View 1 (tube, rainbow, N blue to C red):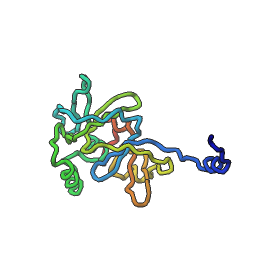
View 2: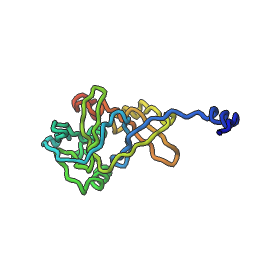
View 3: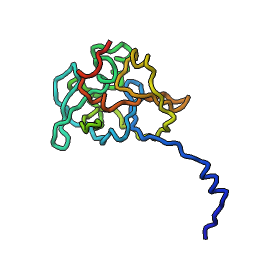
View 4: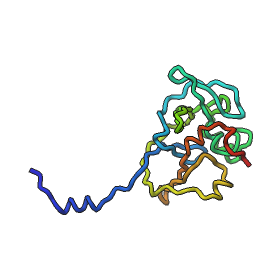
Length: 190
């Protein structure tokens, strides 16, 4: 027979769980990025990508016998084209990260393809070099980006910064709708 302990009951009532969000975390150019789990349909092995749009970083692959748009999110997130406009440090970082992988249509051919879905149910593939990680992050770790950073920063499609602690690098929370929308609709780069 179990014994009811009023002290244990009061202790558990005093501990309130902080709300968390589940995120899919991955790295690009030595920066951490995250997407809400509801935006990631699945991660699959990378297949063949077809296309010749070197300057836009967009290609096609087949997924479940249908065409799937594959986008180079480095091209979307960072305000540079992949090879032509990259700063020397960025180019070295990118080169070391993708040296083992060929590119097709300006898209680094990673080992994995993350299927990302917008709120309007549009699905695109995003190549990754390593498998993403599922993390639960407390809502208190989320902070809005400053307006100055949004104006002058060299990344886009980001909606918040996630500070996990003093010993960990921050993560940038990506907005899947901005990430997926056509390139022409994004604000012009400086």
